[in-house]
Image (cartoon, rainbow, N blue to C red; front, side, top):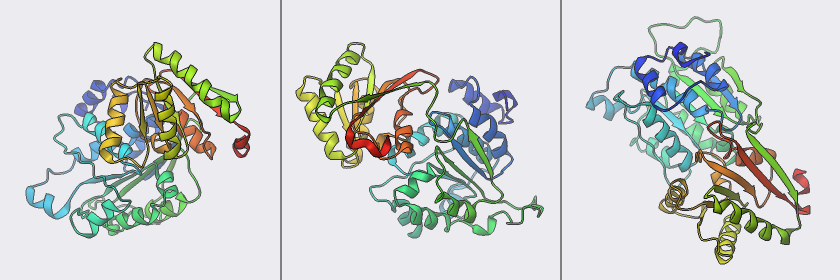
Length: 362
């Protein structure tokens, strides 16, 4: 699919694509959208800032738009037509915002369900508050992270509540019954660890593996700087960098590995006279996390100090600089962190402070 006009998404969805400012489909969208429109199961692996969200949201909306409008009775008894599972509140709410934008004027209701516990959705399903009887379209976004965070049993619990009789036949040569509704399942992520194969084998049928760019690779628009420092040198260097960026009101995300490190560094930066600094980590309440992100997005704060909670699902298009004050434990996490800059076809910069304590990632 070289252009949106050739996507077969329908006139109204194409108008929404135009309103959203999507000029040309990204590589993952070029390949994935036509396959998903054919109701093929897809495993999508693409580098950060590649347009994965629109790659699954647009075909999902096309599917829902073709379904009969629900009555009040069927809404209560059968629930949603489609479900997207994501590992964090921030990512779920970002997907909700993107879906609402692309669903404009289609009459499709979009709702995000988030909670303070890992099994919030599963609790709602088991208590019959959320019913998945007619949900035949499922997307697992950032599936690798859900597994890393220990959510695999919860994901399986939710998927098992769906009408598994609607799974496509395991025999790939068996013809599909055109009169039946089959389940379509997609996994999207920036990396593909072996643990995801268990989920893929159970729930996906004859999936197409789609790779946009190079899996696990950072965006080409990000210039990566690596600086060898002593631990005690990090703070003075960081202060100088943020002071220079602040003159131009440019936004920066500074990553630390723990919530205690985030709080400590935020306090030190404020003490050093950098007042437009806010913090984000898992120890804060949902309201506090939302307030920090909102203030960072609207430009009231120039610097966000965060744990890896901000490494995925945080879409602030004009983040000029990502700084790894503390290096992460893996290259995958590093890739996700620096992928917060260089988005929306804009150039970005990352700076990573390496100390002799980081030899495992050298």
